[in-house]
Length: 134
Image (cartoon, rainbow, N blue to C red; front, side, top):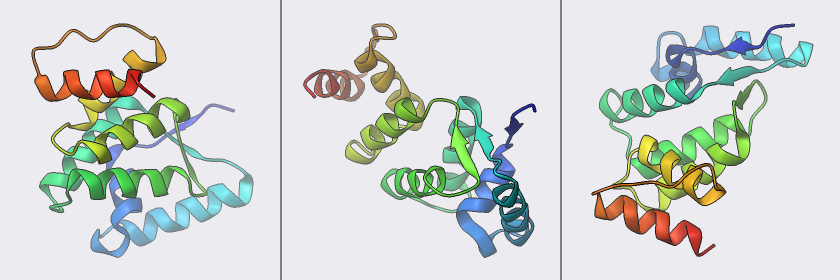
């Protein structure tokens, strides 16, 4: 069976619930998936778009966004394309709220050994160094 790839609208509605017109619809979809043992997969691009929408449209801080996305991805109905990477990136984002989710993903990838981040951003460079110290 092919993976069910959630769009950012679905993820946002799941995070904010009744604050979004589609919240109840998505809650029903998640319940149906859970009953069948299936989950939505949140891809890297969707994670980034969701974080942006939560910040811009709903006024959530990076710490709130990281917490909400961690809670969602730990719940029934949702998973990420790479759970260890996403968990680490969301922790980086919560610890350094001046980084966006894309930078946090870069720091997490670097720490995991996927590559080496080259940046002129001092905040990102500090986050990368901190992740290597863990």
